[in-house]
Length: 370
Image 1: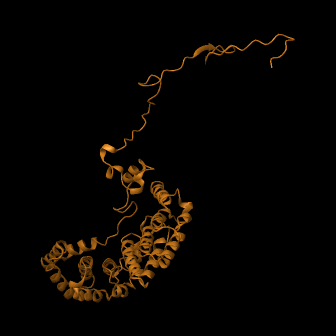
Image 2 (image 1 turned 135 degrees about the horizontal axis):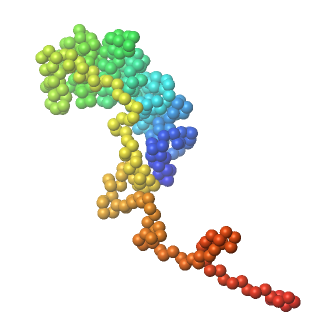
Image 3 (image 1 turned 180 degrees about the horizontal axis):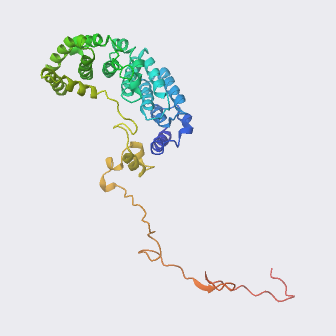
């Protein structure tokens, strides 16, 4: 298994540096039930990098089956994250791939496994921030209130709160301003009433979501927003949360609601995933790893300077354009003695080494030597 893990780490780096080079062999990276856990995790991380318009449907189906059948909690969550990576990668899955993956994730929200539902909510929060995901709000909106009611995992609940504010109003060109989740304020009001019992990620998402809903449905959100701002400004568990709540309150009190609306709306603006997310490897990082290919650098995913002291570093020196052992270069071996002769036919000089004279043939009638 150690050898397989080492090979897979190198395959992963090659798939990142040379996209498409391993796409035809994507079935070789499917997870097998008898493999060690660390190998299964690495295969799940590699599969999204092998997705293209031809292979993405099969890969997504395989990952979805892994989510339903895996008994390992973290492996099922990793499979959900890999599905989200295919959806958020620019043109990786082809036309319709984002919607197909979003439908699968919406189904996972109602799955009777909270850790999967929480990871699916986080994945949908990533997808809805992409350009393609902005057009899927009508698809994501219906199950959100029901899923929030049964969600207790902090990160999953925070993602659902974000989705409620993001998908409560249609932003398309044809139906701009149409309310998709009219009961969203009442779902958030229950969380505001139990504000002290909520985790910090939920409190932060709740503050942003309630302010956004206030500008969409002001009559339903005015009183609950006042209670939330009072609770958040009195909250000493997080200085950042306290300062944000105080900023929002002062902007509303001083008559700058439009500026506040622009600020909170920017948090849900679509991001351009054509290149990469900030946490992904960029070309410079991959180039540094490739320079130390076939070493522990590939296994750790970090340059050797991060785990080897400078005095023990192996110095990699690139070959100069001129070969260092060329004739005439310093340290080059002297050329062998060559005897110059002329070709009898053309008269051109030919380099040749001295040739030993051949023995004379025996005289006629002489017995041959045994």
